[in-house]
Image (cartoon, rainbow, N blue to C red; front, side, top):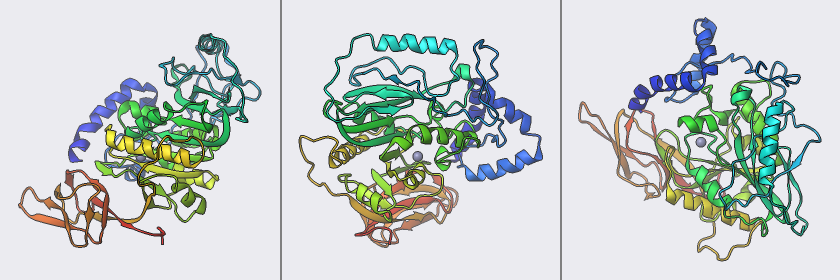
Length: 461
Ligand SMILES: [Zn+2]
């Protein structure tokens, strides 16, 4: 962790300067105000240790000054109210794309009537290309047209759409791919979100494998996947947004708030509200790893029932905190869990397979697909849990492995002081199972090292 801190900042500043000139300007403009520095103190505390670039608290709305667009229409007013205004009436039918084939990327599009003529012409060209072949009209078996991001996705088809929160310079704007498989049969809408923290990679692959295996001709209901929600973070290998904030503390967001608020708001209004069920996929953070597990508010009967569909998954009760996508979605009446699998910055096949299997079982339980075979051990296991912390600074060496069953008093690992040669054991405070743990690293006193789950009939009590 220490090394990270030393290494990252200069690197990060350089990147921001190069990649996002629009960000560095306000940073410079504000560093001399005492107010700004006070605010950045607060924010640094709020953020985690691997970030140290000055934050831009009062970032002015990133408006596009239409100098390069002759056809600029009345632009987004101050406060960015146009972020996700769905444009009435101008929907189009999404091209049917076989997701198993490598297909062209989604056309740039989305709501708001701010597209330039050039953009529109380009999208149109791409759309025509994509729909070049006449589509055979599938026989509609009570499946419904699914409308998302101003596109109608016909029953029995799959497609790639694009979402943009409209926070960037319009000419440089990047869209975030959204995959949709709309089943030919009626059923619920399941949404999958990945990489809300841009450095959490396992979920991206879990969503790819899950979505690309679905056959819209056999599916009941709709599956929507956003494999990389935090695209800027993903591109920089960062957990955070370009404004140094944690997106997963800003849901459901607001159209007039910070950058994170606006992105959260746009995603929530344009995509999440379309979902009946949501699985938000994460990994451990700060060099910690997790057994594949769900975080769910077991005090909410709808959510508790929802968890029963996840085969062989550890379920940890957690009521969630304000600003998390899970919390906001549950408050909006969407059955939601967080799926945690493995470590950040890594692609871990074992964790990915566990995630895919579990989502497959969920879809089967919800009547969306029928599986060829049944897994041996179909029940999820419920846990209450506690973190055990290091009481000394030093180098952490673990004696046990992820998933191990441990008993009270058992030594889980040591913190070794490299200067005095003292060895400080860390002992389990309870019987249970190691459902999450830190990888070996330099730690300080108070560092949460082992997450011990105790099986519970009714978690959360
Ligand atoms: Zn995360």
